[in-house]
Image (tube, rainbow, N blue to C red; front, side):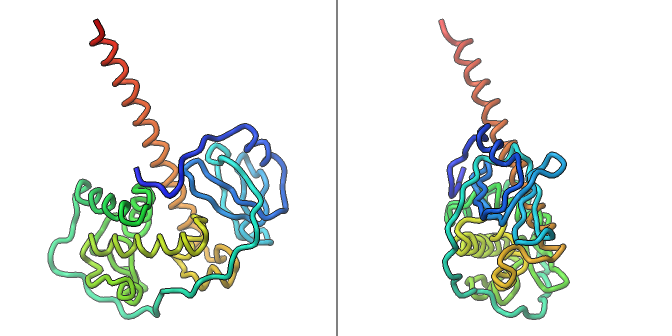
Length: 251
């Protein structure tokens, strides 16, 4: 398991602190270890609604069970210069069959996770949202491959062939890692920058008010949390099974 952060447990105190609306800038840490900064938050229909700007239109709904803690944060540092380049015309995918089986894709994701210290389930969640695992996918805007790299961005990342799965995932992982560093491990902002570009995130001081970007961020975070919970459940089952085997072998 490759994480930038250690997993934490939901505490009663953390949930109690979210029971009433708040107006201070806060850092909300999720159970999967990632965090996001919100301008304010409130309980809405059993979910914690994190408002990512001073208004009421830019928000993400999070289940209280996914929240570990809430802490005030200092003002963020000045942003670094972006690495993205202007999009170019879409290139046609190669004629060769680039379809991957799950084992091949998992190995590529694991290698990229090790290199960039990213959770494999996070990378898998991004791939699912970006291309559905289709290595030859091309978007109407010209984004290509598993992690939907724009040709200009891919060139700056050293990706020579965006339709080669290993190159694409390594490049996309490097870019996501850079966005996490840029936004101080704020997963929601990093994903928004991955989707809409860091310039848009900086311009709006949060997730841009684009329906596509807001849906994308929520989709990836939901899928990532689902995968983390499934991984934890599988680990518990394996531990129980191993304990049962040890008992059965005991004299």
